[in-house]
Image: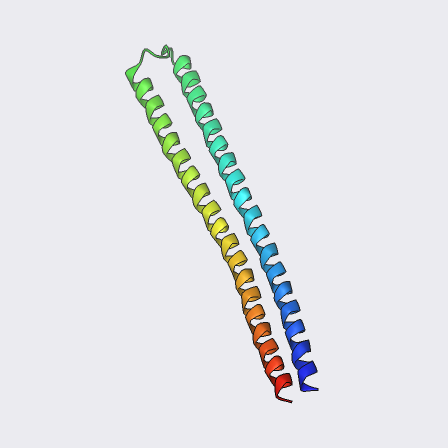
Length: 142
């Protein structure tokens, strides 16, 4: 009866490891989807910031025109415009950096999940091989 239980234990152990590997793969896919969403979100935030800049520049132009200042003729208007553009560039760079950082975090998590699944399978195969060896030694001694 002991040999049969060892065989059943090996089979059940392999089945459990297979289930754990499948769960790790699903977790990895979820992380990959989050990485894609982080990229999409960063692109949307970048576009929103560009839109905000265009509105600010248009508003500046309208405001100056209403005051009778011809666009391109005032040094202070040019300085304000340059300042707004520089601030927007810095904001966009930060948005891109944070997006890449978030994507990288999720990519690393996905890789970790896959590695965990492989490790689970490797451990189960090793245990099953050890049980098979024990069964074989036990059968040979009888």
